[in-house]
Image 1: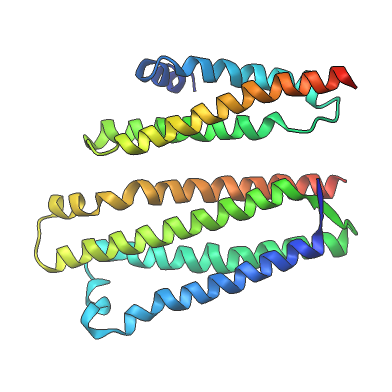
Image 2: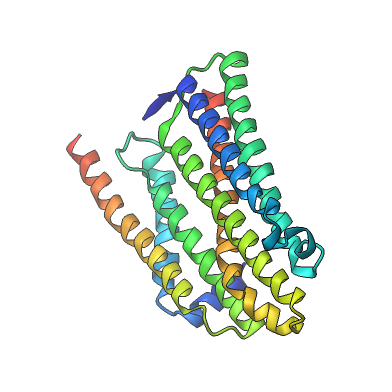
Amino acid sequence: MLDSIYFLILIQPYLYISLVIILIGFVYYILIERKNEVPYSILWSIFLTLFGLVFFYLLNQLEIQTFREDLEPWKDLSLIIILFGTMFSGIIMPLNIKSLRKK
Amino acid sequence: MLINLEQIIKYFFQIFLINTAITIIVAIPVLIPSLAFPILITEWPGIYIIIGFFSLIICGILGFCGWAITYFLILKIYKVEFTNRNLVFAQIVLCESGILLTAIFMYWGGYVGASAAHAGMAEFVIGEIMEFAVVPSGLGIGLQIAGNLIGLINVFSTIKK
């Protein structure tokens, strides 16, 4: 598990941001979302980011094992999924906290 | 956000019927002599045609029928009438898109590869020819796994209610 995370960060250093946001998202889920009714669940964005990360990891493994050079569009797609999931998490958390404070 | 279980059972049953129709359409090329399916299936990459077709039958038809029965049993045994709408729609979209991606690209890749093998091409050339189908098929399998996991989570959370 740690090897895979290390491998991902070696290939695309900016992915540490997504990994940190996933961790923050889990903490946020346990401490805030489980105890309160919120309009948007953080679990969807965590799922999206994790799906993108697994997809990106498997594509890189495929590239290393088969020396294929035509995987760039797929890797871009997986990075878009990760970016979308990370942005979604980053937007949802403050929005939910804001709406909870208003309540 | 909640949705009635009877409505969900209807959706799953409708998709089960749609997938049955798709499977029938996918099976029609076997009857066209010029496409030479019976010969190509005996060549090495031809097994992917069978895997694609059977993934459509097992996941697309039996899988959706199974999910419809599961939700029906939850309704009858546990007397729960509502379930999470977002989880169910995510399950349907992920499973259906995954099934179609896997079936189409395995079938297509297998046919192209088997045709090349039948024409006497070398193994590494056949591998190169079939490369286009690898990632979409894998992505389809991943989507199916994710969809079924979401379905299981939804079933357990619905029973718990």
